[in-house]
Image 1: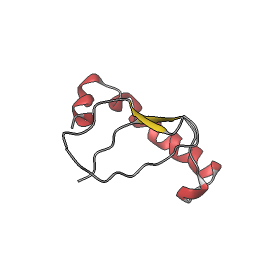
Image 2 (image 1 turned 60 degrees about the vertical axis):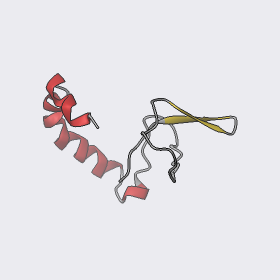
Image 3 (image 1 turned 90 degrees about the vertical axis):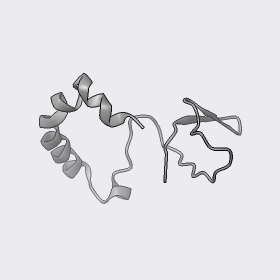
Image 4 (image 1 turned 180 degrees about the horizontal axis):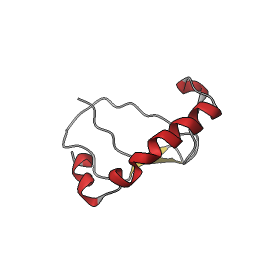
Amino acid sequence: MLQTVEGVYHEGKIELLEPAPDVSHSRVIVTFLLSEGTVDLPSRGIDETQAADLRARLRTFEEDWNRPEMDVYDAD
């Protein structure tokens, strides 16, 4: 099973921004994000026009996704 925990790489060390899963020993995969808020579209097989279209189509769900009761789906 995979569990994602956000962190920051700083001066050769990874600092977790939330508690680590309850494990005593585990392999990890570290993915470096280019910068906050950016997405490498070509690596996902889409271009700027396709991304804009996708954002526009998903915008209709934004109000539902941001309702407080939807937070239950973010829980572990």
